Amino acid sequence: MISQFINAAKAKFSFLASVLVVLSAYAALPTKAASGQTTEELEQAVREDPHSFSAHFKLGRAMMDAGRFRKAEENFLACTLLNPKSNSGRFGMAEVYEHTGKFADAILVYKQILSRQPVSEIDQYRVQLAMERLSYYHSLGDANSPQYVFSNDFSDKHGWKKTAFPLRVAIWSDPELKELKEPFHQDVVRAFERWQIASGGKTTFKIVSDQRSADIVCKLVRVMRGSKHGRIGDKAGETALQWDDSSDDIVKWSRVEIFWDERYNLVKLEACVLHEVGHALGLNHSSNPHDIMFPLAHPPYAAILSERDKNSMKAIYAN
Image 1: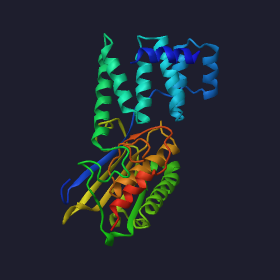
Image 2: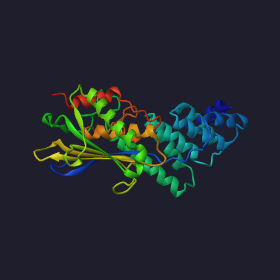
Image 3: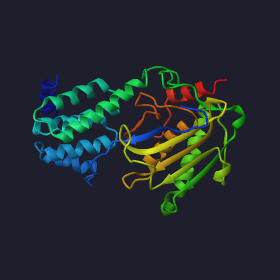
Image 4: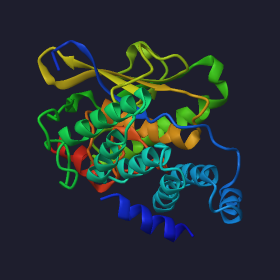
């Protein structure tokens, strides 16, 4: 039944010295709350009622959260046939394409949404934000290059002086998040360890207790500075850097903030920490969704460094 929906749907879809600056914010697309049902239960619901828009949509979201993008796409395609007037399935498909690097396909779907009249103001706004995200990804350079440090005009080679190592790292958690204090501490240590290995052992570090003496301060907070909404989605984390007085290519201090949200889990937390620590060490964003430095957090939220991530860190500290 799903294959019939798919075939039919496819036929229808033809920086300054001594200035503290925010280097980047890791973002996440706002999603609907989880249904509370297991994937197996949702699959059973689709088998029992293959014409249920709601069942397909919930299963599509569940598959998306699990990182099973092909299955998510199948169910969102089914939604577009079951209820052509709704754009929910189309937005779901476009999100799948963003997460898998099929940006041209995502653009086609967003354009199709705008071509359907009438278009609600909310849908127009969502498409506008999506197109801004896709434009930003494009500005980050070639997604298939061996590394992304020099792949675009905004990604100069910024890093720490050799004499700064080992970097002194302080870790702090909001007292009201005491159950996350130890997991966060472990995530920060692991993140620095992984980047140190990626750099060929050059980005050494040590944990210190005094924030005032630290080179990098990593914080887990409930309340973020400024707006929750970033240029490409809701902020999950943010890194600020202060450049050395002598050069805007040399970092002399950094603050990493991770914004805890009740919708998050420890898997998302670990991935976010690894991303922001990459910024603290000098990396900019990547245009490839398979890299941890891709600006948009996405399922399955794996805290894994790609070869491009590793090559890029090596490029910063090559000499």
